[in-house]
Length: 245
Ligand SMILES: Nc1ncnc2c1ncn2[C@@H]1O[C@H](COP(=O)(O)OP(=O)(O)OP(=O)(O)O)[C@@H](O)[C@H]1O
Ligand SMILES: [Mg+2]
Image (cartoon, rainbow, N blue to C red; front, side):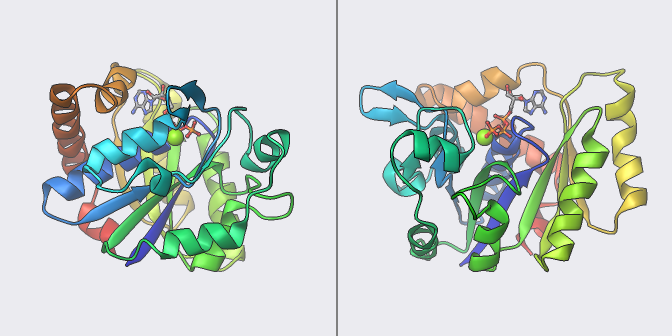
């Protein structure tokens, strides 16, 4: 099994959307893939306890047979960095347990693991997602939320990856602004000139992104059409072969 840790230039930049698209795209092209969202914060209370909406979305994107408890073992109600959300819930996240749980999911060739927020977000008071990637020896896929400020956030993240000797599979640009946004129009070329990290694709701005993600969490027909649309998006806009490594 190989593990790819998906991080972002920030929270809310499209990690779930991009990971869901890649998971759907690989599944549709016959490549076995599974997903994890090992720590989810900002979970609402549902009938079965805290509802991890990213984990539900990702599970549906690839039709994972894993239970939600396996996909998302740590859930917290506060929409905060994991370490702080855990502390406010009166607990601590056990990084070693997390590593063991992720490594135990060895039956699949590729496990896509969505982080929370960005690379240096704390999991415990002293450990971040960069430390998790180091312990797992997992390469990183960086989702660049393409809007004003993205070049700085992307280059900062890439520099930390390099300084820690972490592998970077590449970055995917995810447009967070509609047509005519000059920053989003120019970010891809500026980043390509500023880094040698591979750009694996650019997802367009989607006017109905929220509905698309909600479709994966809805009834079976909605799930099937959302999966098909995401798979097409991934195949059209992401270099899936290079992403698989
Ligand atoms: N390509 C896109 N076009 C338009 N809106 C998008 C796009 N990608 C993501 N969004 C929207 O941006 C918001 C954040 O997306 P998403 O939940 O995937 O981000 P995230 O990085 O996973 O966030 P978190 O840090 O909470 O896990 C959502 O409302 C989503 O619909
Ligand atoms: Mg997410």
